[in-house]
Image (cartoon, rainbow, N blue to C red; front, top):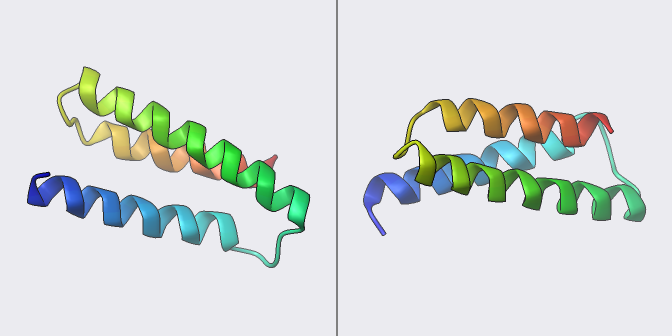
Length: 72
């Protein structure tokens, strides 16, 4: 894996943690939903990166998706 890919992965994991834990504690059901939702977001991001050859707009889409997981 390239150094930039690892950097993106670490940033994405940190961003997901911050988005999903912001504002307090989650219940077990909320945590399960958030994990499933986040997994879908990451799958979409991976597809975006492949389709757009690593376009930075994929990061913005990931953040928006993770924020939507938190709002549900």
